[in-house]
Image (cartoon, rainbow, N blue to C red; front, side):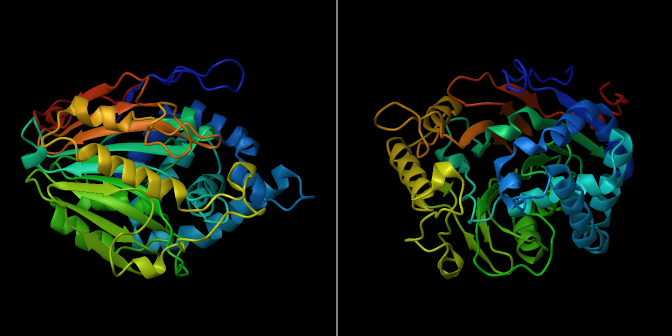
Length: 406
């Protein structure tokens, strides 16, 4: 695969190289370019869905996987396409473009969108991720810094892509996402606004089918400041919970905690915000997965008998401990925290740099909103080299006409 990706022998993911996909135009045009440029990796994603354990556990036992995939795709399209057209029509246009460029049916693409909802269900796993934001007062480089470890099943590791979306309709964005998706979980826009998204799990029932990745993408495209983004995210349509870290070029930081219907906002404490996967806002705690909930036999093998919030709470406490040891943090200091393997020095399911049997740190990002700078590594931060994207938006500002990457 010549996609900035190295797949190891057979289906085993190898070390990844971070390539920037340069997309431009309206949303349909950017989607078409995304589908065309990422065609191989998108097709590889769908041809290997049978290896996604969370999806397999949703399938009725006797139903052939391809039959289940076709039925699930049609259902995902039926439940989500109309809502996407109504609430976020630009993202629906982008999905149409991706399907056309990749040469696949649009319903199948919506299955990838729907997976964000059901693979995050607490019945299967409490999705991971750890994120920290520090204010300029606590930063050794004089500007706010946001850092995140994205923890997912190893299945997703080959499919991360980094996009520069030079939109003619909205603010331009730089983000990391999964190849078939229109939205993203982590990104930065031309105004210096950046957002990271951790899974959160409200126990209230959703009233729509729109995943959080679409909401994050819309916020990056339409907001310039933390205050604007907080209001946008709290009012936005979403089908799942999330714990979002928001920072802007002016130095304002906030955490937005979302369930499908409710929201809460946290401010930095002593210049620091820490996000894991459990709610901390007083108004959101009652909607969280109970503290004493355990995974049962319905869950994947690796989690059975484990307390649902165990990893989230241990990672939060460990980050809090490590950050208390310094007054100011360089990028190297923060990277050491996010490469931490605990007191034993051996990474596991409860360490900040996660090395679990099912969930593992498969992508790590550092964002500097004032500099419009993002550093990306595909893999564990403890053994990966980061690729540095320093304000790619200046290409657009200077009137450059760089074509989409081939």
